[in-house]
Image (cartoon, rainbow, N blue to C red; front, side, top):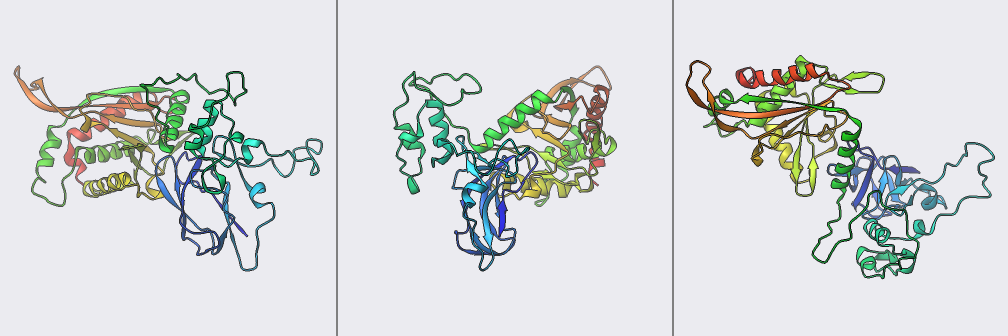
Length: 413
C-alpha cells in the first residue's frame, strides 16, 4: 500500500483543500496521473498519483483541508487491502475543517500513554460537516451534534447550520475567537473568506509582524522607455510593456547586487544562485504570484512573452507548481490602477519587493536650462528586510534599478 499525501505545492504552503476528486475510489490509476484538484494559497493545482494501482481509502471530502505531508488516500496493489483502522489512524478532521494527525503511535515516555488507553476522538471530530458549516457553528454557539445534515451521508452543510437555532447565552461555546467580532446588523453583509484570502491574510500578517520592513522611494523618468516602446509600435508580435522593462531592470540590478537576492535564515543569509522574479497578479478572489525564473538570462522579448502568458493563465487558474514557487524577489505593479505611490509587504522568503505606481506626464524643470518641460514620470518604492539589507544598500539598489530604466537600451539584450 502507498499513501497519497498532501504535497507541498508552493512556497509557504501549509495546507491544501480538496476541490474535486478526478478519479473514483476503486479506480485504477497510473503513476503521475492527476487524481485530484487541490486549492493552495495561490492557485488550484492537480495532485498526481505517486504510483500505479487502485485508488482507495478517500479520507477527504470536497471542501476539507489537510496539512502538507498528511495522507488523503491510498493506492493499493493487486491483493492488498486497507488496514482496518485506516480512516481513524491516518487523519481526522478537526472542528475548524483542517485535518489533523492523531497522537504519535510511540509516546515520548512509557508512562505518558499505553496501547490499552487511547484517547477517544472528540464529538466534533466524529461529526461530518463542511469546514464552513463548522466555522459558522463555532461562531454562533451552535452544537453540531443537534443538527441533522442534509448533505451526502448525513454531512452537515452551511445551510443546515444557518437554519439551526443558536445556543442560549448561558450555553457553553467553543474557543473564543482570536479577535473580537462585531455582530452584524440587518444592513450588513457577511462575506466568508475563501482559501486564497485566508492564506494571504495569514502570510501578510506574519511578514509584517516578523520582518523589520523599511522603505525607499525614488522617482523614475520613463521618457527613454517610452521612446524604445515606440520602436515596436508596428510589431504585432512584440509590444513590451513598462512592466517588462521593470522585470528586466530588477533582474539586472539583482545580478549587480546579489545581497538583495537573498533570504534571512536566522544565523545566516542565503544568497540565491538564480534570479527569479515574482509578479503579483490580482484575481477576483485574491492575489497570486507567478514567477519568471532566471529572469536575468532572458531577453526582453522572452520576459514579455512569459509575463503575459503567466498573468493570463493565473487569472484562469491554470498555472503549474513550478510557475508559482521559487521567487527570489517580487514586483507589485499598480500602475494600471491610477496609483501614485504605495508600499508593498515583503513576500517571504524574499528579502525585498518593489511597489510600482502609475506612469504620469508631469511638469518638471528642464535639466539644461531654466525652462520647464513635460516628461513621463513614475514612482517606485522598495520594501526591504533590514535583517538582510542595510538602508544604504536598499537605497543603492533602487538607484541601480532607476539607472537601468532611464537607459533602457541596455535592457534590450
